[in-house]
Image 1 (cartoon, rainbow, N blue to C red):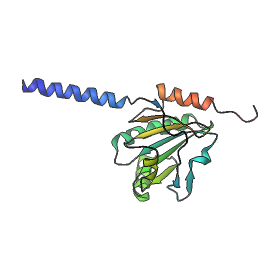
Image 2 (cartoon, rainbow, N blue to C red):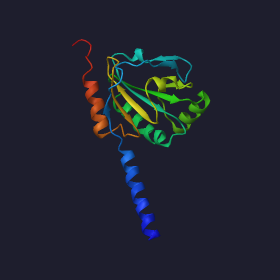
Image 3 (tube, one colour):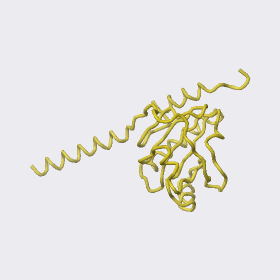
Image 4 (spheres, rainbow, N blue to C red):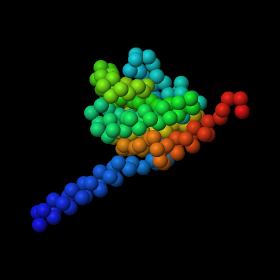
Length: 174
């Protein structure tokens, strides 16, 4: 009986993990435009307003968050696949030091624009109460979609949704 209970627990845990891995994108029903500005990893200033005219994937993450680390390569693949198009990524680090973030990105060979949210005010403003939490912002600066949990952004529904938003961006000269 104990063995059956143990196997049942393992099976339920596996189902729960699978469900968590399949985080669902949802339409955003909060404030249309949210402030997001601060210091970048390289010491410069970053303001989401500067990304106007581009679709932006805003990803709240931390180096200690395993799903965040697992999701990062897919975000990089997405960014690379849309190179030359009106799309970018803004990775918002949740409360860690510049040194810790820089070491992690170097070790993982990840190159993304990173905003340091040391005091966690940005996460609070965006209602990012768990990690990873990701938002899709359209070219007009409106938050359109969000997801809590790990997502493979380089394929499937997530890729199609990003491509749809990019296709909505007015092209210069048209």
